[in-house]
Length: 114
Length: 118
Image (cartoon, each protein chain N blue to C red):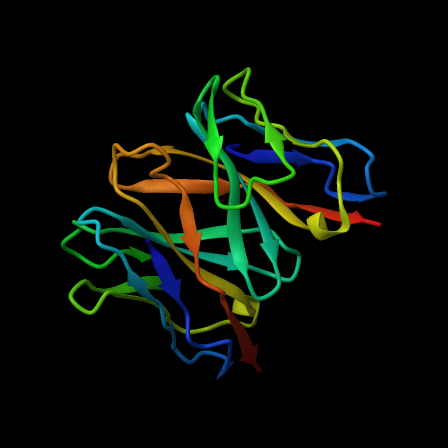
């Protein structure tokens, strides 16, 4: 089954304690991305990766890091989380299909930073 | 810059009726893609339908169709014969042109909350 997995699904942490949210896809997609969703703001892109070792900033990269050492994995790192990073996070992956394209999203990670 | 506008914060529809969710977009690129996603209360993002800017025909996927009016920069989602399970948040999104780094970034609208009444 084609899927994007994220872990953990729910996380409560405290300010300043480093955390990593993992993302993995089994579709051999080149493109992966992280979004955050906040009420009234829709989804906004944090970082994206066009392929292994190729990453770049999205619209709201401050306070986040990513890495792409393997094609299937794209972890999101919060070195020193702050309360304004409390949000719902989505990982997504995509590739070109025959007659269009499909972007797959992971199930989401709900993060609360106290 | 690309922008997506969804003007309906919420809609209430009777079960089995058809419903149209509005989406307008703004871009200066000749090549782009338009998406609709469904987000139920459980939170996951479910891909519904895709329309490429050069596609001649409106996209359809089962009960979902996309009413693509390129000149008006409109990409409305039509759900035929609505069901209780269609109650969810719906997002319209756009990606940029091909062959540009980051082209597959999605820009999202603020969403429309659809409630289907029995």
